Image 1 (cartoon, helix red, strand yellow):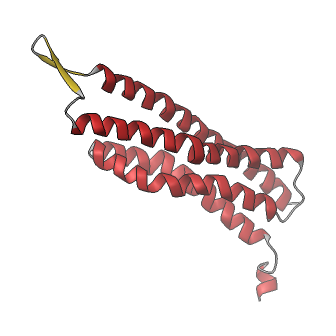
Image 2 (spheres, one colour):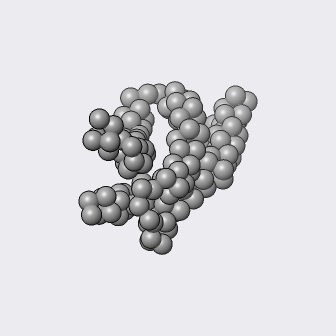
Length: 169
């Protein structure tokens, strides 16, 4: 029975892991995060993402490596390359950008806690220069992180086309 279903080879498990990786990334990035951003208060959205991102980025870094090591077919340099791009993008997000963004958010939170995030100029309440600077800095690093996330997803999708061709031979 197991052999009839093909479960005695690595192919179905490889395909299952790939499906979870690509599907989870697409679902989180294009469905869950936009909905959470739209419907949660900013502070709650930030808390949610702070809990999700470490696991998400570790998955982006590790799963392509596991896919490469467990491939049921011989990987060509191209497929190895796209898996490497996906994994490196996840690793950069986890080890470099996540700590930078967390630090910036912590600095912003400290300004708010110490009531230094706003100034009153001409009777109007405005964001302080430091708070505005931190927001711009966060936006820059968040943008880089988003590009790396898209690169990881796109490279996994490209790997999927290679895998589909190889598994249907």
